[in-house]
Length: 385
Image (cartoon, rainbow, N blue to C red):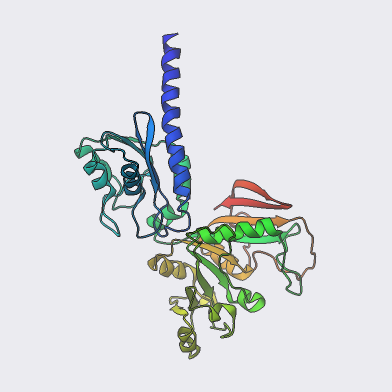
């Protein structure tokens, strides 16, 4: 009987910690799409069983979650000394755009730090633990770890590999077509699914398409969300893979390059590059192509260069040739496949992944099911690679 009582108390104890961490997770999500290439982080200060301050990392270059929570605490007229802090990601301990959060925790007399995710950044990993230990501050790690880890898939991938986290997104009919044989593709999915795609654009630092998509659709590739709010929603960096530099100077992409950052990856700079640069485009020459690449941009090398440009996540939207190249290069981390209850038919109609294709079903790109979401009559399937 005594054992049962102890177990019950321990369960209540764990539930209390998880409830505070859950609130920190909710706060972290408010920074989604604004903090790249930094992670999203939320923090909650608790004292005497009450929340006395909250904060999250709001924008890249601005204060981190812990410092915002402490500032909120003081604005409320509360004293953070002796409080516990719940933070979704291990506090930073190095100078970057802002001072170390470990300094703020120590200076304000925080008693205990409850942490969701460990930070794989070599500037932080294990070092913050040593600093907090040295200051006599208690630490508990792994509170809602899986949920906290899922907040920063893109950041963890980017910080450990130096390459962007790539989400391959496409919309297709029930018979696997992304456009009719004549090239018509508007619209495969309904309005709810299309709205969600704009949220995906907002959540990724970059959006990538091939020149075929630009020539066929003349897209804008911006972020259009109705619930922008006072902070607005940022447009992703537009990345056009255009090996032969065929993009028209009068395309929507080029005409708006002065307003939305636009990178054109090419193997042949040509004289046209000057006119594109005058319009505001950045020309990225991608070297190191193999003979088998047939003059196309080497996607693996491109990802290295984009990582160096601090583009931490990319939404890959089209088309089929580029999708196959990215899969073959091992650049894709996630697939979001939208399926509409329609049948187009046509042996020449376009499919999500084209190119030469994989020769063996046993050595093709293998997916791991992650989840399914319903958007009106459309289904989104999520897979990890």
